[in-house]
Image (cartoon, rainbow, N blue to C red; front, side):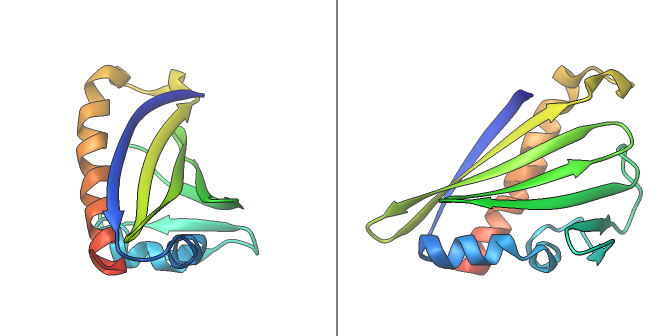
Length: 136
């Protein structure tokens, strides 16, 4: 896996509340502006439904949960990636560190170095929406 970028944001929500919220894939459509809904494929996998097609085509998401972290493993047609949300307690809430890692880079038509800044900006928008939903 190659780390593409990291974003950070703080929320007033507790680590436990943030962890519980992120563990539920149905919540993603509430804070990721380009996700309409999450459709269960089975008990562990969800299909991401977007309003417009993306370069990655159909994407399947699996949630993994650990101590102070929640990971979304996404398998797409062009890129497989993982979003790791690291959660650190602050005196007044939680720091969320979002790390995006990728593998299966050979299918991309554009070099990743051109796509990464765009992806980072879009992921930061979503992280900002997540923090607003959880409470600033």
